[in-house]
Image (cartoon, rainbow, N blue to C red; front, side, top):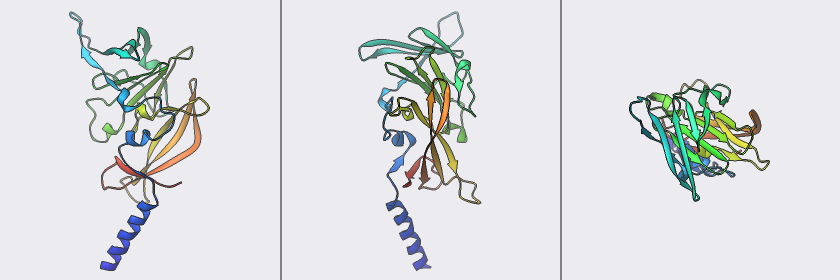
Length: 225
C-alpha cells in the first residue's frame, strides 16, 4: 500500500510538472492573456443613491480617466454612459444567456476606456453555485451604431475581454469538464469566441484548466496543449 501511495504522489507531481502555471482565480488567468482591454485596477464600483420624492434607486460612478470627466449610471434597466442611454433588454445576448434589468445594480462595477465600457455584477441575492456567474455587458462605443453585448457568465470578468490581432473583440466561454461517472467537475474548458458587430463566432482555440484542490473551482492549472 505504501508503494502504491508513493507512486500515486509521484504521478500527481509529474502531471503538475508537465502542466502550466497555477492560477488562484479566473482574473489571475485572464491577466496573462494578450490584448486585454481592461485591467483589474480599472474597475470602479457603482454607488447607490436616490433623489426624493422618487423611490427609485440609481447606481452611479463619476470621476476622471486620463484627464477626462466620465459619468455612468444604471437605473431600472437603463444604462447611461456620459449621458448616452442604452437599455439592458436591447443588448445582443450570447446564446444561453438572458438580459435582465436586474443584472446590474448593487455591487456592479464599471470599466472604462476611450472606446469601450464594460459592466460586471454578481447579484447580491445569488447563493450557492450561482455566485460563479457574473453578468458582463460590453459596449463598443467607437462603432455606429454602438455595439452592446452580453457575454457568457460562468467565471466571467471584464478583464477577460481582449482585442485579437485582427482587431476583433475576443472572449472565452467557460464550461465545466467532468470525468466519466463523476458529478463534480474536474476542470473547465475555455473556448474562444470573437465578435464582429453583433455576431458571435467560435474560434478554433480551446484551453483546458484542471482543478487541483477538492471542492475548489477557483484554483486550477492550465494543461499543456
